[in-house]
Length: 310
Image 1 (cartoon, rainbow, N blue to C red):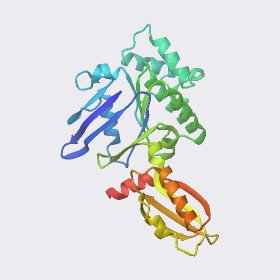
Image 2 (cartoon, rainbow, N blue to C red):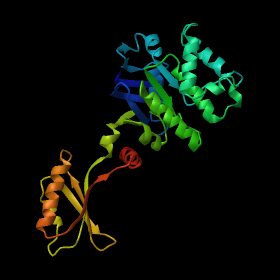
Image 3 (tube, rainbow, N blue to C red):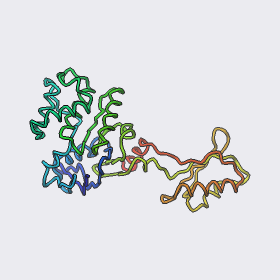
Image 4 (tube, rainbow, N blue to C red):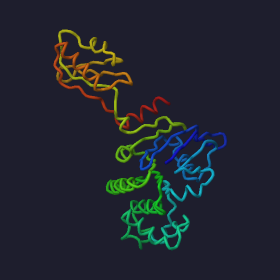
């Protein structure tokens, strides 16, 4: 669907994006994360054809963006963070105007507009003036204009910015529905949105790609947590001798028992390690109260990535 190779963008002597490469598959929802100035908006503008790369290539649906930007732009929808809606226009007229700019023919426009209004639950507000709409409804108008032309790629920049909890939940449901038929790149500062919506995350740091991984893999940890009781012979030396174990941290729990944080080698199968650890506990004459994988949340991963780079 999307192939980005060695993407670079300079603004004078400032390097905004440097040697970024990634691929995104069909119907995948990818979160684009990073601090302010990390290069997120620059990448989105290059993907949309609004900015030209200083170096590198972008291929979308088999089309080279540099060679045929118009063909690519006809297959994508873009919601910038600050959408230039016109408050004096009626919703339907605004969508008709955008559809015209996108090159949608006069005969196709009514159906396209009805479809976009229905998808965003705006049908009953189609004749409202944009100025009277709440922030949440204006965001829906922004998504509706991005949907015109039945795009295969949606780029959404901060789609829930400024929305209340109910509006945010509606936007989440809308994005989930859209993901059934299109690929979505979602840029946001709200990590909960990424957790709730995305299949994979791209983290940018100082214009470079610091992380490219699926959320399911991110949450998999190579640390096993063992809860057991005190034994006459210390258990840690036995655990440290296992070939899957890198090192072990131990400490007392509130109930007077022991907690072990067992760090495993990167290529270790958790099931094999867990079986060997359980055998160690049994051989040491201890009681196995709990043995489970440690899970990492996106917030801690985000802080870890940026701590390593600062």
